[in-house]
Image (cartoon, rainbow, N blue to C red; front, side, top):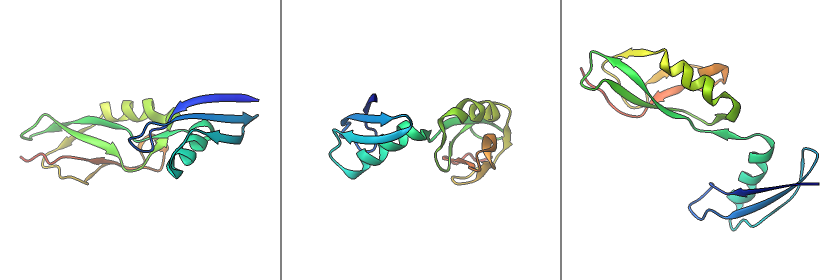
Length: 120
């Protein structure tokens, strides 16, 4: 049996979780105080994902960069590919919150979207 100790990030409580696994199957999760804790613990040991936030260069805008994020969480092992893809992009101003900056970032099926407005 394998034991993983985690700190839950599902809510602000930060509960200490103990996840017990048999091979790749979750046997039990202890320490959570809300249902998000159990969901987070299982997902983190079987298929960890993250929301990625970064910036992208802007040409012709009032700001040199715009903040962006993945619209949904992506597999944790795709984070660096996502960041590399964002380093290669320059978008023209104007940019508006919610604009799709890059579709299917790092072949995840998830779009990268703007989280700020940048005007001309």
